[in-house]
Length: 315
Ligand code: SF4
Image (cartoon, rainbow, N blue to C red; front, side):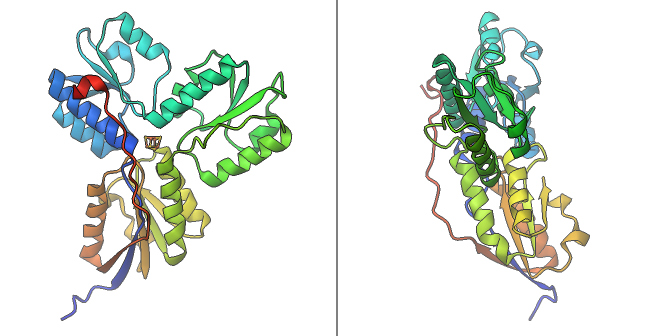
């Protein structure tokens, strides 16, 4: 007996969803609540996902924009995106217990920035203005020692004082293809510019973009689960669109625009690095209410990255 529903081939990208840095940041908040009891304050959204933030709020996390909203005597966690140096310094000055959930791959970029400045170089930083990770990385070095470029066009506009003494670094969650084009423009204009020792775009960002590229040619539409302020999720939607597949970023299944989705043969589905798998399953279930869904997972190498938790929480 058939269900009478139209068939739908659902191609689910892999890898997708939570990365090791997001997983670690969430565990830090959970363990801090266990250790100190609620409320535990968290400066900024721990990761850019409303579902995650609401769940942690339910456990006793209180999200604030700035440190001065944290009352004396309560612990505070800094988000996975990283914070300018002045933030932990201010927490120390107030005698606050703080836990740094900055992703180790973001911290790696921070340390590189410090080393380059110590070596007397000026840094060209490829990233998105105003993103918390960019604010945090700029906050590792003295004002004026780093210049932001967001596009290939920006490269022609910058005017560094000593073009022979430049280095570049990047945000961890950029488009692999756009960044390659910007780096090419930088190297063409400043042949002596020093590249980072290893790629700054993180493994999770590049793997999720590659996974979208792998399935996009087979899809009529692509759904990306992620927040509108999640850089790596936005990049996934761009990657799909550039492969010629109309893509929509949705936070939850309820945001699916059914008119836009239409009656496709194959839909691609993925999730940004801050979106939990439970939201992927929610979308699958909602699609299955309207279609006879046949699920297929994209071929992939499993990710094995994990990051250690801060010693004070596991001791
Ligand atoms: S997306 Fe990359 S840099 Fe950001 S938290 Fe995840 S692993 Fe770390």
